[in-house]
Image (cartoon, rainbow, N blue to C red; front, top):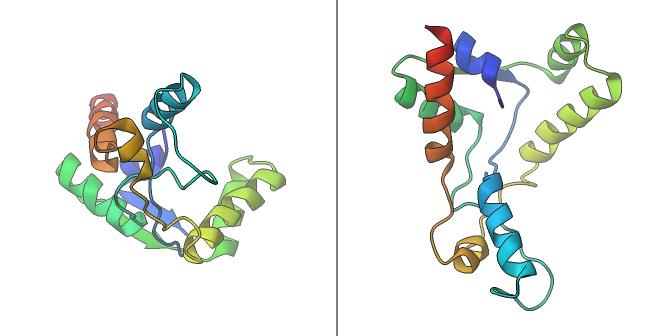
Length: 145
């Protein structure tokens, strides 16, 4: 699971980041099915299909703290420190560069756009990162016991 180590250790560690309009896979799959079945449509270029809020890792740490009932902090490290840790874990260099690229893009605001199209196509609000984490972090808490 995303950030499993951080949720377990109590620190979400990584380089400087930025807001991300988190989108749940189940919502994307549902809207894909609607579009492919011709039950939903939009005109023009594909719009961003996003949740309704953009959160950074500090926001994610605050959510996890609230849901787990224990402190989860956001620890910022340099890209060099992050790259070294990833390499030490056995991650291939090409994957290290992809991971760092995501942080760089987030910091530049590339993932911050929030758009209502996903919710409109679904006919309901998009799932929130909080609701996703409620389920995933319950599983993490059980594994720690």
